[in-house]
Length: 111
Length: 116
Image (cartoon, rainbow over all chains, first blue to last red; front, side, top):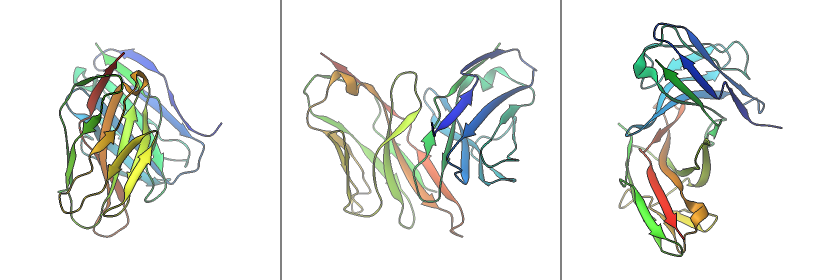
């Protein structure tokens, strides 16, 4: 089925560990996005990508790394996890001037 | 910069009550406006949209009208149901000055609880 798949759905990691969140979309949309959702802040954009091999920073990029070697995948890596990165992470995709399609999220806890 | 200000929640209503969730925006140019809904444990889903002034978006009994004169896009529903309990996000879609990038800015969300 077409859609966005995020994995894992839940992740617990320790401070200082590297962790990668995966995102896969089947629409071949050009744009992909990573958001984090925190109480009181709503959704904040971490990184986005306009096409394969093109990425750009959003509002809160510090501590995160992304890559986009293939159109359908957009992994998000926390190089050295911190407690402040405990959050729910949403991946999304879109074409130009169309609303975003969201995955079901990854709930990350950093202990 | 472009921004969205959304009514603070939470909002608690009885079934069949009238719902309004306020949303105002600040933007240059001609943005598009959206309402998204997030049900518990799920990602966001597009509820409705409007792409120009005076457009009315509607879906599942929800409506919102793009009012340029008041820079507003308030969400309304005449008779809410328990199944409408969710978090609602207003969002502003816009292109950068070069027109090459399309971005979405979200409000902080409003939690709606509908009691039977």
